[in-house]
Length: 328
Image (cartoon, rainbow, N blue to C red; front, side):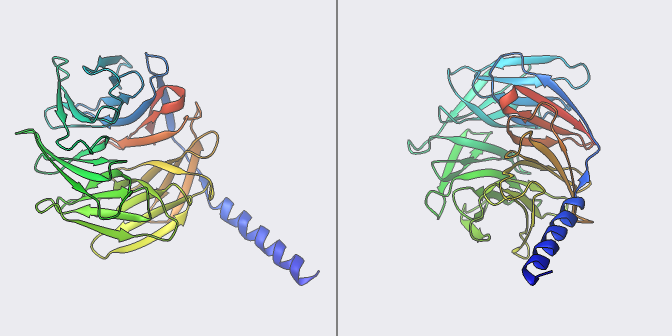
């Protein structure tokens, strides 16, 4: 056998070995239809009572699924064509959402159906994207094409905005670490960012060349996992050490990892949106082992996901007009 042929055989064997190391994910995925057709469910969130909340971006509604009964209720928004995108529940059960089409942050009181709207103080701040609460009850949010980070104090309604140092950074997913520091993806470049909760000074952290981090999730140890949508990697960043590592996603370079979350046991869950059907992937940080399964409906792009306290995963399956509950 020629050397060139031998090298090819070795490469094929190595690839087969890598593929075999990805296990089959054992989980129950139960899907539920959104009542309004073509609603484009975008982001899910977990309510204080365990309910699955979801933004219905093209239907201009928020939705609530009772996991115990399967009952689905929809809440129309006050401003037409608001384009609700990200959402998060506060400790009192109010649902806060980012209205990406109309440039405001909203609050729904599910008890009354009343909606409060908080408009951006800067006309250049056009597209609130993803919100998250810190430990003091302050709401932080990204503004995607505006390349800003926002801070909203619910007690006063006051909003402060901070542009990112990198122009066209496209701030996307956001989390708050245990010490109260918001971290966010810069999807327009190969960086993560953090913002000082007091001074609002922004620090940026470079990732490998060509990386495009889109969503991120906080691990119990305070480190951050992110999906590299462009290169097909799962990434890991330690803010204390400014240390980064990454693993090729099972679906390969065109797998487009997107929605991601972590469960209380530290396991990472994310979806590959570039494969058909979309996959649900589980990564165990202790063993560095991947396992995956297809999403029954195909997913239609899982843009975000959320984990409950008891380890279930909530999905929004945009293109097939469904939400799903994953039980490991």
